[in-house]
Image (cartoon, rainbow, N blue to C red; front, side):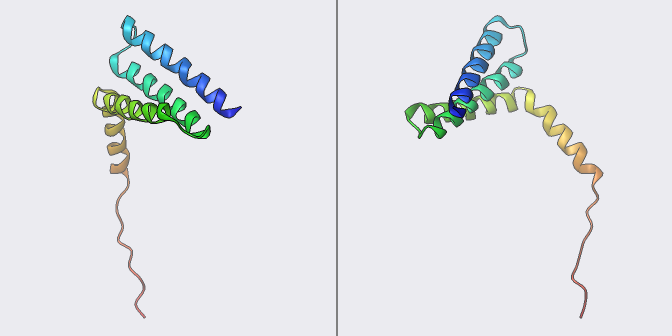
Length: 99
């Protein structure tokens, strides 16, 4: 039941991402993000069903679309925000108390 819901959601996201990419309604990295989410949901559904060649294909497509999303502009802002958040924390050296 859960696998069917995940597979349906994955196919829906794939259709939306593909339509967005073909019509150029959204930026390229946003469409790649939708495609990565759709392939990821389908991969998870396939893994829950026992796995097949389609599960491995979806896993490869998930990795490819996620890489394209990350390098195409979607992940760059995430990387920048993570660096800004990391700057707020100051490192403190903690040593064991001397006996």
